[in-house]
Amino acid sequence: MEFRLPEIGEGVTEAEVVRWLVKEGDHVRRFQPIVEVTTVKVNIEVPSPVEGRIAKILAREGEVVKVGQVIAVIEEVGAPAEVRVTERAEVPVQEVRREEVEVKPERPKREVLASPAVRRLARELGVPLEEVEGTGPGGRITEEDVRRYAESRAAKRLVEAPQATAVTEVEYEEVPIRGVRRAIADHLSKAVRSAAYVTIFDEADVTRLVEVRETLKEEAERMGFRLTYLPFVIRAIVKAVKEYPVMNTTIDEERMVIRYHRRVNVSVAVHTEEGLVVPVLHGADGLSLFEVARRLEDLVERARSRKLSLEEVRGGTIGITNYGAVEGLSGTPIPNYPETAILGTGRIVRAPRVVGDQVVPRYVMPLALTFDHRIVDGEPASRFLRVVIRYLERPELLLL
Image (cartoon, rainbow, N blue to C red; front, top):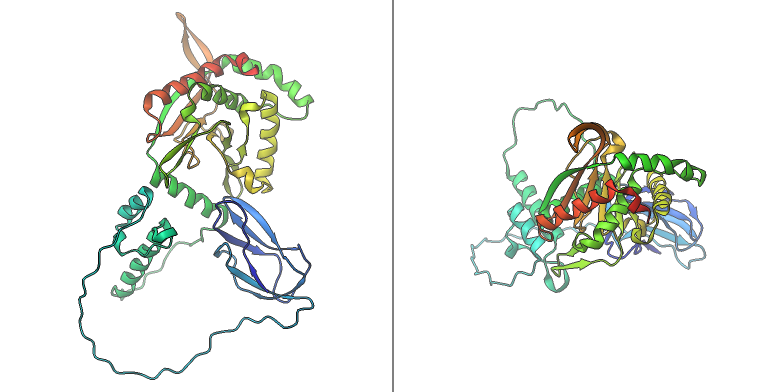
């Protein structure tokens, strides 16, 4: 039987083959995992639907395959006939002499069906959309169509270019972009091409927050989890979203609509050995401070051990990233597209600040809020950040 890449999640159209767990000739049981693929920064082991023998592996490790594409052939146990992969036979072709006649037919004009994001990509790559064949529904041109056209044109120019006569030694090593790094590259490239991101900076006096966390930390440890500063920030985001719901939105570019989400699902940037992974803390608006801390710790641990499910990296509505975890002070974070906003938090530093008429040492947390200016204007974004700061500076309100 032909073993095809099955559907592995809503909206997922392709995956990269990370590694085969079997080799040709191996006997496999039904539901035995035989190949590991990665998509949306999650590794998934795909099982065999039947018992049998691996007759042929058709997809190489590192190859990106479409859902429904044949990636292996399995010879079923008790099958009436052996399944073979036949190679195309070479047929001799008689050379035919023909006379070339230059013909310049007029190209009929046709309507170009493409979304704003696709048109923007075409402009960046210098691709004339009227020359691109669309493979989407109703002939709609997709981003993949534009890239394919650009790559074929670049390859043609490379072939036609004169070859250099001198050969110099190349002093570098090329490493294929694969796995999580490829997913990150594809996702961030789409984000910066599509959105109009702006970052604003501020800081919060978290002297009182440091004291409150120190008081609650031992109780949390007795309950079996660590209490970091991140749950406080997430609770502050949840509170601020109630006042500025436009920050808890995503965009559908194909339909040009903004989705206002009823629940607050926080995308949390987590560094792993293989690259950045972004698990989602679903329903953060319905969790207490301790519940946020407990679930966040579990998500981070499973993200680093690559044990997240596909649903746990999807459905985010607003993001957060913590530079302080790696001693970073600030940065310009990129939202997890199609989310509208992400808040970056830096390491807490002790610095002199004016309180009343005196200069006193205070604990300060740097903050950076990046948002999509197509959806949010600067004023509501700044006011949203001030609300977050207000709650961080009065942490008792986050316990309610």
